[in-house]
Each structure stands twice: as C-alpha cells, then as structure tokens.
Image 1: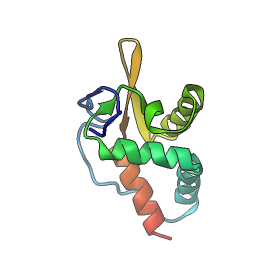
Image 2: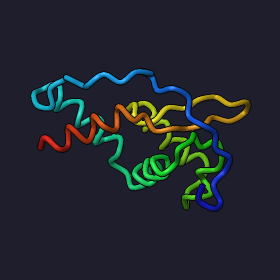
Image 3: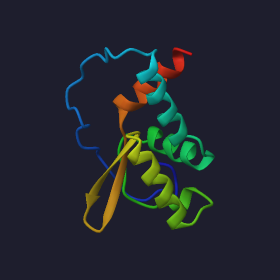
Length: 117
C-alpha cells in the first residue's frame, strides 16, 4: 500500500460475483449514452486521480484518500459520490467509515466503449 494511505481490506465480491462476457453493443444510441455518462463521471482530474488510486489497490481503501489528494474531505466525498453514482466504484460501510473499491466490470465496459471510438 502506498505510504500515507489509510487502512485497506479485501474487497467484497463485485455486484455480479460471476463473470459473464459483456455482450452489449459498443456502438449505437444506448452505448453512446453509457459512454457519455461514464466519461462525464471521469471529467474531473481529481476523479481520475481517485480512480487511479483505487485501481492500484487490491483492496478497498477505508482510510484517508484525502491524504493522497490536495483537496478537502468534503470535496473528496463529492467526487467519490459522482464515481459511485456512475457505477465506477462501490462503497461498503465498515463501521464508522466507508471503504471504496473499483467496480471492475464497469471499468472494463468503459474501456470497451472508448476502444470502439
């Protein structure tokens, strides 16, 4: 774990605990809307930093993502909410804290959508 990062724990199972191939089309109106929504969620450098930070971990980060970014706690919380609402990450309550993990299936879908451009 990078220095300064708070506690981490193993991620629970993803929303779908089994992996089926994603057979949804990567082109068309629905795919375009999906790509636009995911791109909008990543449309701020702080959210890109947060996602990169979470991707580098093999665990949920339950600690101070704030310590890794030059932003206030409230600002980081807002960015985490945007990423979570878009489905790119998930948050699991762990006592008084929320632990955040990347949602790998959604990240793969985003990569496929971008790759189809």
